[in-house]
Length: 331
Image (cartoon, rainbow, N blue to C red; front, side):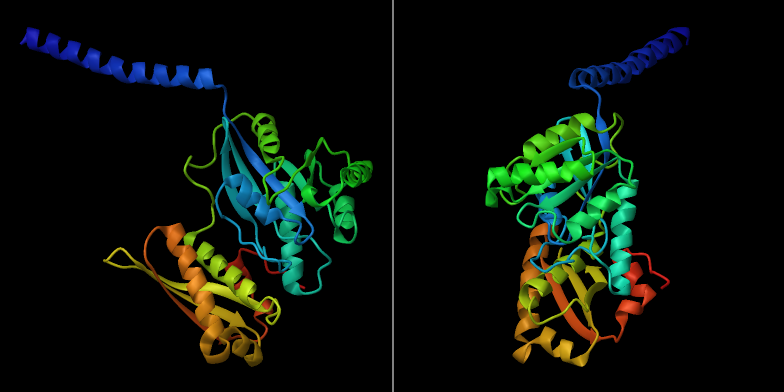
């Protein structure tokens, strides 16, 4: 009995040492790799400055929709990137512009709110447009924001070097930027240097998200965003901003496929006709393009069904704002 108890005790001791050894080895590996860094970087800028394109480039995957139509991004989309020993959470904010409608005000308020919640702010300026229009007003607004600020001059491949230097000097005269980076979100030029800077400058600390997660956007919402992008790309000239997409049903099927039902909301009957197209050609093309991309993202067959509904003044409906992740302005 005593021997048995002693043997059992020894077995327990041996087993108890093994996890400690594993922990010690993991700690040694971590120490060799150096401390982890993590933090939030808010990307702000005028509409169509290239923020969503840059987030997709830095994350290495599509997490934010892109179109040549301004004000495409309506709510904050977080893209999560791993670089060296750092997890960098990019906050792709709506473009900042002079608001005219209730939806405009909600988007601009969301953008500035996102900036104030971040560890670091990166102002993205379209080098071709320079400081004209909204960019100059954003620089004025940044004077009230106290986080460290970076200046990112985008589309450098389309502007002469002397013009870039003059633009950088003019912007730095207005705001005390800690660093200026000249990049191209499209080609990736300068992006590695930018990521190196973030990975060493953001605070030391544990990562906020699992290593394999690239966005915090729910899949139902991402699916709606993908369809909204295809809607813009197909009908960018005919259809105004008075359109919104919601995922109403998401059904995982036994054969491994998924059935998705989405509604495209417009404000007038004439807009519904545009969204449908002659003989349904427009809605079929939008559905095909969206289904193809969703199949690639989800890595499973997708059965996508699109419906177009007229909802007058949906831009004044608090429920629609909640679906978009925006706070409803009271006036």
